[in-house]
Length: 271
Image (cartoon, rainbow, N blue to C red; front, side):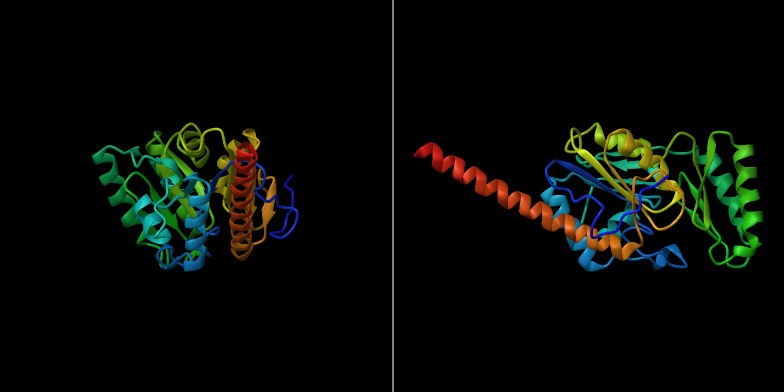
């Protein structure tokens, strides 16, 4: 059972501790659009993310189903640690890229098979990510069952693959990767280690991340309706934007208070 919260009151403000921030993108930092390429993050939100990254000494990461290259384009000028394709590729804070790949022959076979099959259904869209494939049906809801059956048949044929359902999409990805594992990997590295994780997401793909953050006694936030393991909830992306601004202001205040306190201590010592 989830805890309902608004951006203004019951959702905790990040004061009094060191936090590590993790954000999903589609449906969280950006409004859902009919097609993935139409999505954008407002400039004011990107500026806030840059400020949050600076205030947290770089302990801010994007965790998304999108490839890292797309995350960089969507979030510029932010260039943050990122987990793309649900963690199949991950760029750590040092800039090192960790990537899981499919054998070339398997990737080519899947691409040909899925391209041919998805072309049968008007409005359906295949998004290829190299090591993963997203089968979108937001514009082809009448073919949802057939598309899900196609995805299931692929996983049955290639047991090293797994399905990841989402909002009007089903993804085919390598076994053993998810957003929870990606967040765990970040939390084992500087500058994230030892901090309290905060993760905001909106989809089924984010549930593994919520579980990991809960286990670490962090703040897990579900955007939108539906059952979730998240401990808190925001109604929509505008509420996310309001909380982002609240977090930035709180961290700026904490930093100012800390600087003043250090100044007083130094002055006291000299006296």
